[in-house]
Image 1: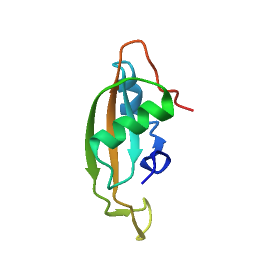
Image 2: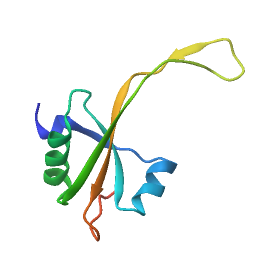
Image 3: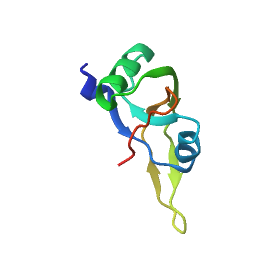
Length: 93
């Protein structure tokens, strides 16, 4: 697994916006990626110094579409909260 495959995208959410004020960023990562691999990939891709990595496995499930009987299966994915050195930033497209 290469560094390009480890980090899928920077997640732009309300929680991610709040965390960015604390030098923390939300990243969607490959489900098999480990914390040291995520830290190395973030340092190489974004040019920052990573201090800590926390990971969360988000379980997918069935979601009902509002106003209908239809249900949609949402995928399972892994996200990482990456803490970077003070004064450094990860650009959020």
